[in-house]
Length: 315
Image 1 (cartoon, rainbow, N blue to C red):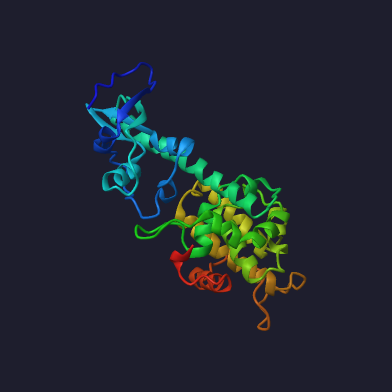
Image 2 (cartoon, rainbow, N blue to C red):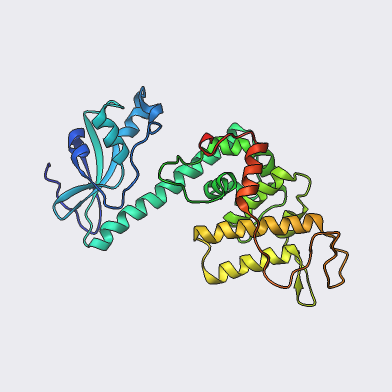
């Protein structure tokens, strides 16, 4: 390995390295994803500035060894000949001073790069589908998890699955996104689970957007200690925010299932009728306790059938 001298004050060094040096550098311990057939497929015949992006990599030197912070997949594809390797790479190399910093560097780099690239993909998909959105939540918010939840019934992606294709997902939910955008959803209320529920419900019941309009306007109701469906969701979102659990996948999946249940109760119930009892001829509208969730998989399957998606790997 060429001698890469450390810098001061945490500044990285920028060096030109033989591609063979980069492919032999150690994978960062936090890296787990392996290369797939689809990775960098569009780069096989790249040239000019597009090909130049392949040469830009980021790594760190820790305890005398060179580690990759990104470029793991490219290194694998170069090694097996799937993509032609350049003669050299232009590497940005960091010099962590502690084990914690060594791991934090990986997390910081991938949190930023993943968010930016995903947002760029969504913005490009909006342009391709001629969508001009007004709400900040949809226009500038990250929708990856909401799409995954609405199409697969969960946020987490299994090791043998590919991530949801964002451009296809935007096209698939174009009508629902435009309908939801008219409600001007807020970032605070429309967490991932609520957005996913909106995509599911507006796909299956496109003429009942009023529930999400009321959510956006926070127009829930309470009577004699009972909550209407809108207030049920607002209360649940407030609880999640107060507990600081919004980033937990299982919490958002549960929020989605409960929001779908609330939507159904609102759609089928009569908000003008209140007798403190359940009428057997109509769905329950008022709730004493926190509303329970639906069987989310059943509704996701209905969405997939309506969107004519044969299996989970199709999009």
